[in-house]
Image (cartoon, rainbow, N blue to C red; front, side, top):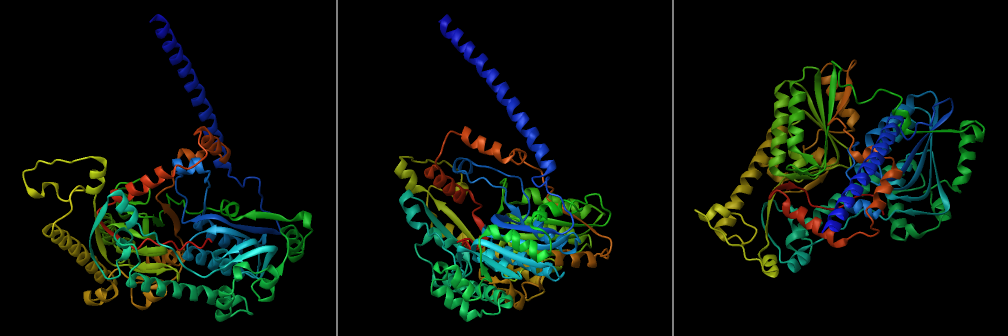
Length: 595
């Protein structure tokens, strides 16, 4: 007994000391990380005469910087990266165009993951850079559709002699999950409004409906046509028909020489020769070449942090799925107080809401919409700038703005609502679980996950969703100054590309975030004296403070080298079930341009 006590005491003592040592190590790591963050990863770069601005188009590109949140899957799979942000890329290219020390732009292209509108915004920024008279050169060991689309705005395009043009058109694959849920014993009861409101289909059918397929055919066809036209503008040997012919005949597997012959690229060269070419292009010796990243350039100028300015234009990012109370996505409980604060701050002269959202919770969308109404009641201008998506709930929060800008490749609309109520009685039966309820009224436990709804209950839910749809339609009609009947004709849950959305009145202008900011400043009469502040204010997480090497160490400390697919699947199912039962969201399809 005494021996056991002694061993327990000793183990506790040793454990405490180990904890103290580990805490000290973590403290040092965080301190090092903070220093590294202050100095920046590009601290060794300097800007001097005849510098070349470099944009590395690899990895994930997101809207703006957000706190890093690493989960179990990220750690054990090693998929740990700090993504580039669109706002830094665009601002860096803008600054590079006017910086007298920058002679040219070098695009290092590879496999970058982003949606069409993000690539289009980068391409537009590259085209603006060229208007300064400075040259743009692109090189890639391989190009995806997205990176080639950006590169097509360059003066010269180079491809590795053994490289690849992975251009195969535009499309997506949606996962239909009814078979999975049938095996689990989970059924979904659906109430919805809108012929094209197909976001519910993957949970209740095994095949895509004709309306869903038709709207995606139209959407992708329009977007692909726009991208082909953009490529042909600079690549004079190409036509829209020729691009389709090349793609249909296996462009992805053709040689670099074939790409040169067909006018897709200018030359096939190895990367090691690019320094020599770049030096010749700008007229300096190869050893004197100086490369500067866009993040370094942006770090040299005041930008987006004018929180004390008396003539402030606020740029508020609403990115991700609209959720109720979650830590990721657009959490109305966090966003609404920010909007209210900006409305009450006399130094905030106007607001640009940057929306990149497929929608989500109808309740959350309504709360954000009401807060934006309050902002406008202060007689301050409100503009919306749409990113990759501003659909369903994303359109709900956009539609009453004084001015709506969208990228030509934005996906918007999807005006509709659905209810998705899970019935897990089959799963409970399989597990041997028999829920028993006692209540004062039949409706006390309605809706429940453990019993299917009867016809009366389904009717109640249908009326509830129809009331939500009517509310959505009225809001769009008010914001877009349309009749409700006209809104209903273009609603029905249908998604639209931004060019068509402008034709039918859902969008005012095709333009960038910068265009929206400039319009707002002009409307607020501060065009010549405004400063920008970005919200929510970035607050780094613990993981943001760690240098990349320490994150890898944390991964190793998890002691696992493979992803537990069962856990991943359970997490996905849990996410679906925990969503707000009434949703205003677009269909789930992936149009990230990364083959």
